[in-house]
Length: 287
Image (cartoon, rainbow, N blue to C red; front, side, top):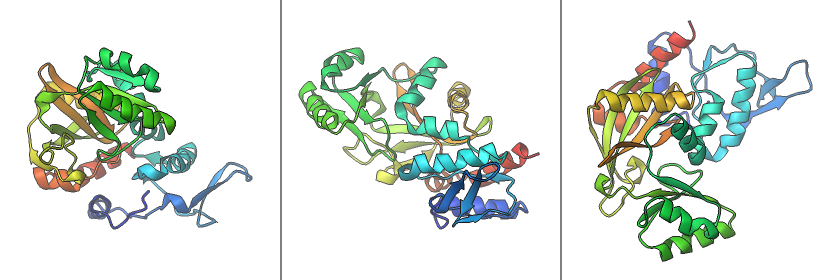
């Protein structure tokens, strides 16, 4: 399920599927609608009932169409179609606060975090996470968009004031200076970590996302760190995801989980055929 069949990750997954002897179809979620008037709701594609049987759907739903994409995915789930990632897990991963709440309830290590509805909450939140500098994050955002570092209370107040006027609540987190603009991205498939890399951001940018010009290099994770990654995905009901951690003086800290991770940067950095690992997991799920 994708709007970008030509994208690297999609083409890699499709090629691995065909090599394993399976057929592949692309389903653009923006062309899907739901007919609720018949006996049992039906997903329509370009206005027509889908007659081709499906063994499993691999959701690659863009952040800009999350709500619509998950609505369609839920309808397929209601019809008994297997999905690599469950709609509930994708929805939870797209809401940073909801995901952090899941991690905290599972007693997974996360940075000191507070939630600010507006400027009135800011001073208390900054005190809660240990003072400035702090990192401010929008509840939804991908590839480093909506993530800001504020070195003073005044600068944080300015950001919060603007966001409050736009009715945007925000997450306040401690700034992990010792990570020095790098983090770890691990890919979890099923119940194992299949690849991991250390990402380093561009000079002067504390965000390490590859899409923002960061670089990646292969790294071997300790078993306890792998367990954190696997448990994070289990807490969100995800079978395939990218897990991001920061290395701090008190150990690894879980930042977020991406339910539609890009494969290009990490496959090139590690040499691991992640797409094949994903298809193997789908075969296991469907048999």
